[in-house]
Image 1 (cartoon, rainbow, N blue to C red):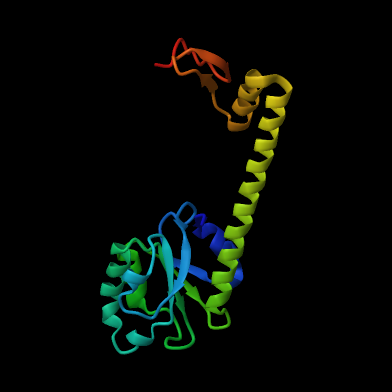
Image 2: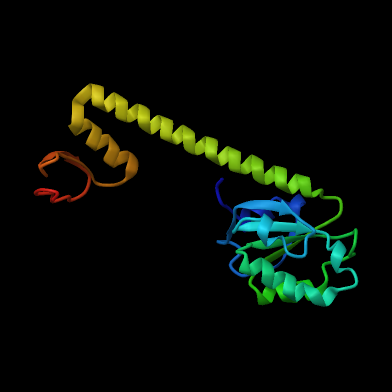
Length: 190
């Protein structure tokens, strides 16, 4: 599961709008969980976004402060608050609590099902993973071709180019068998 940025999430305009959060451009999240529990910490992962409509807070708005602290302590990255069911708007008490505990907070309007947010996140994570696998497969094919074509010297050259790094093959006794990329200066690896 790859991390996604809140920036990516908020570019999906139908999924919600940001209300609170510092450095949203760089901040990331790992997954989206739906939970109306007062303390979902036991059932979530660090980096998650917790989605709720606030059913249990209708007459207890003052308890949003404790709720936000519990989420922050659990490493939750943000809150997606669904409006139009228990609350017409995101309660100011939750806005303040999210800001105090540095949680990203977004409004998810009633026409946007929580499932659509979860599905969009899952699709994007799958797309990115498939993209990474394609890149890795192509790199592996290039390295295999280099091994057949020119042995260790070619493998090191292709590996250095593909990884943008210095690459060396060093024998058990420390002798450098092949190297490429950068000023490696290997005189014996031990």
